[in-house]
Image 1 (cartoon, protein in one colour):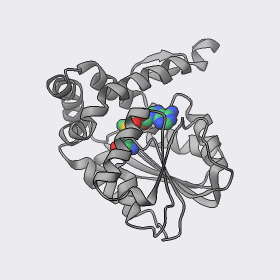
Image 2 (cartoon, helix red, strand yellow):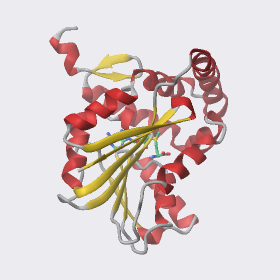
Image 3 (cartoon, protein in one colour):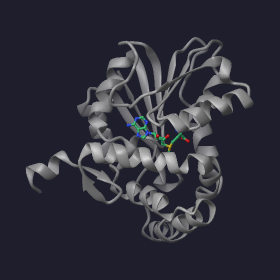
Image 4 (cartoon, rainbow, N blue to C red):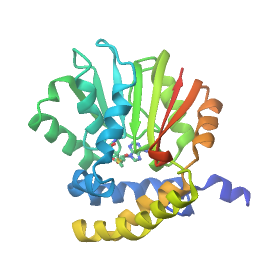
Length: 249
Ligand SMILES: C[S@@+](CC[C@H](N)C(=O)[O-])C[C@H]1O[C@@H](n2cnc3c(N)ncnc32)[C@H](O)[C@@H]1O
């Protein structure tokens, strides 16, 4: 691999400049924002709800904690987090304004706005002061970041000493037969559902490809270690379709 290739990052299954990935990801999430929640249910056959509930329920949140839901999307995680805290201490941050607008609208409709703060900003440049958060959650956002190492440096900066990072992300499945079935569903069925629901097979093809080029469980643990996180560990859910990674500052 040339030195130039090393500077590049995966966007789906192609290597591109970081800025190109950032713009590509922006455009995809702007396109999918209208049908995002419905598509999540269809693609995961509803199981993303179970994964997300487990992710938040097992995080050890205290009622006075200040928490960042990074790459918050339409606010699925933030909504679950609000049940644990007493004050307006949940911060939703996403680089996509359409997604944050959806999260604001939804929080008003579903009655959790009063515990939330909203920011449009990228993970690589967080608009928060040093040592601010007890927890940072990232659910299905990390693989889309254009500069994963820079985002981890930013997360280190904004976490309090002893604060925890929690990442829920698609990962590597185990078991040959299971992986074959999962791959068939991912590459053949998911883009078709995307086409039917949103007339947009391409965005969902990106999502599937981006899962395959994202770091494995061990690679992500190493990445957390090399960015200064301690006590890093992961737990597989559903044979590694998704994994929860954790690390402490
Ligand atoms: C698949 S959605 C996940 C949304 C939500 N967390 C969930 O679990 O449903 C990924 C989100 O990551 C956001 N995102 C992608 N790259 C980002 C970055 N570099 N900084 C902040 N947000 C980013 C996208 O705009 C999108 O809203």
